[in-house]
Amino acid sequence: MRKQSEIKTHGRNRFSGSLKSKNALWYEYRNFLRQALSNFEAALGVPNRSACLLYYYSMLNFAKAELLDVFTVSQISGRIGHGISFNPTNAKSISGDYLTVKAGVFPRLYERRTGIPISINQRIPIKALLGNIPEIGTQVNDTGIGDPTDGSFIQLLASDANSSWPVLAVTGELPFGVRSNASKIFRREFRQVGAPEKWRDLFGISRRLPWAMEFYEAKNLVPHVNGQSNLAGAASITWKLRNYFTLAQHSWLDAHFCPSLYRARDVPMPAELARYALVYYASSLVRYKPSAFDPQLHPEQAYLFDALARECALPMLIDTLSYLEGKAQLFYPEDSWRL
Image (cartoon, rainbow, N blue to C red; front, top):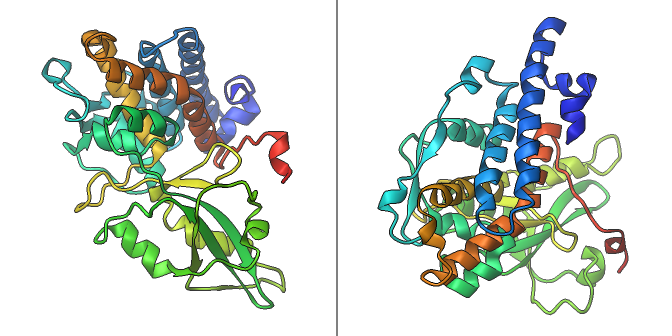
């Protein structure tokens, strides 16, 4: 991450225009990053949900840095709003609370990452955010606050003599409502098939895996290019669903499904945006209504948001690095390459 803020030739490569203009943008960019990293490092020393206040201000500065190549400095710095709001004095229960989208950083970050706008005054239910963050699925299930999404998949890129296509091994359930846009896209592109012969070997899955898998194969094939397998073209079929899954940050799965915030209305919320919004919510309560996390009165909420601060810190940092670098950043342990 620090090469973005400390090595001029690397950091300013994000920007276009004259050298003078690029240097001026990098000056703002590097200081957003430095401030973000300082807050992040300070948060690592806080042992519970109180860290969310520092993590949020870290993520806010990272977001401003990320947006500098598409917005002017005046549109990003200064007194720009958070872009989401929450009134802690009206907070009643985490399962019933919601955020509201406002003008500011969040809707710009949302559009930058998803490619589609989110409506101003759109409500974002906290319960739905919790379900779309895979790292805290166990705690969400333990507390009964929210419904964790358990659908995940491993992707195999297959080829024959002429064409390439993706095959998905899915664990859990497809979390798309029947009428949702994600469901329409998925069923337009994929059909369910039986288990391929020797599927564990093909997908590199240990025989100790206890869960059943379902398999989905792309309906359309992409032709080879210059006689070579077109793996990028095959993967692009899966990437049409990019707003409805998040890449796994461990070695045994490739991605987790993230359904829309609403069943009847399509509002994508991939995990990298759900983490950002939920840390904002936690920071508001930590700052203005810490009694919401009282371990005697609200032990489930304290337990859940302690897990948020503990489990989501590294994924949020990886999210940022991926978008600053312009490609997914995957960190696999060395032993994951052995079956």
